[in-house]
Length: 487
Image (cartoon, rainbow, N blue to C red; front, side):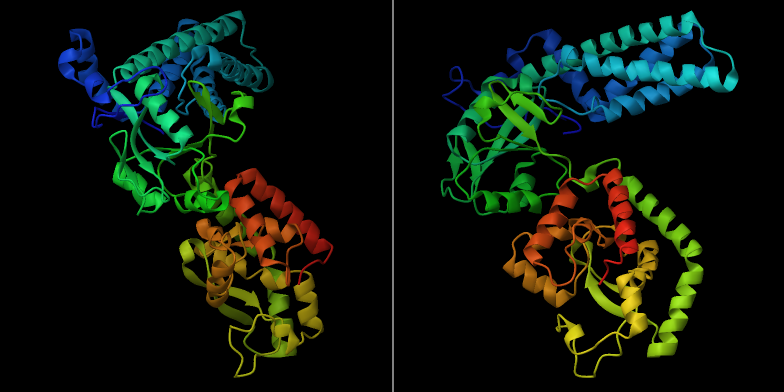
């Protein structure tokens, strides 16, 4: 929900709930609008293309630069303050679109962001430049807070006006046709200030063609239904499907450029107490956490992987060379074990490991799950497996982009097909790159451990990914290596 689509484009929908019968089509008639609103209709579509988040960032940037310039602050301090402010407010989720826009709701976090923007340059000046920023600096910071607040008030007022007149709206696909789904559709129709415009329903259990004049997609996947509706928001009601089936559908649509909300169970008892919670009039909506590959931080994962893998290959070069020599002497060639594995998007790649077992018999295939039953590692093989040294060549896979440092462990194609058929969650692991180590591994799920448990931990990692979580898993992996818990 990064930006709101401009213009009408909705069919009529009469919803008998939530305060009367209202026609979307009537609200969109240009001849019913005043000249002032017609002017908005011409201007706002152009502004909407830039996106609400960018307008807020522009307003904040103008506020802090303008206020500190008036306060005659040093140029370097002003630039540092501006960079800190934009970074802090982005981290505080103030550039994320919300259904309910309110300066009062955002003011505490806005104040914190401005305070950080003032404190960082002041600290740098005191420590490095030995020239503390004086009273005028803090007056300028206070002015920046006032200016940023006023800028947000203006932007939010325009957003609310545009939403009420349906000049801009998020095209919304409602999942389900139950009573809650109907109530949500009624609220979207009768209370346009949320910025949501219902354009279709999705319910594979309902054979009807339309509801409230809107199409019901029941023969499509959720992904294709969202594309067919042109929806950039998906709101999940209770529906009649079992929860596990609904979860699979949402995960299959993970790559869609859409915000996903769902009505929490016992919603009557829940308020709007977190950044992931919003509300549509009387219904709390939980915003599904952005899938990892759609976050700004995800772009840093690849850079982190490359930097750490490159440094590790250089630092560990003597160990790699000694291991290769030991394998060659005790087990012969080849030193490296190559095998096809499945990575992100079910794409195959060739994984590299130091060989820890004797060469396989000619009649052995990749369909053999536990080759240890027929082949036993020698002393070198047992050591490099226990210390996880056999996995180190995968650092080259990381540099090549086949793998990541942290992610679900990759498996062979035959087992991927088998496990995906037997365990519904298993195929969802492939939403992110495979990893040298992962959450399942540091939780002790190695070797002959339940596949269903591994899949649950892998999906838990995917849906709660952060760069810091990667660092924590790497640190726990190092601890496991020193305890020689490898296979």
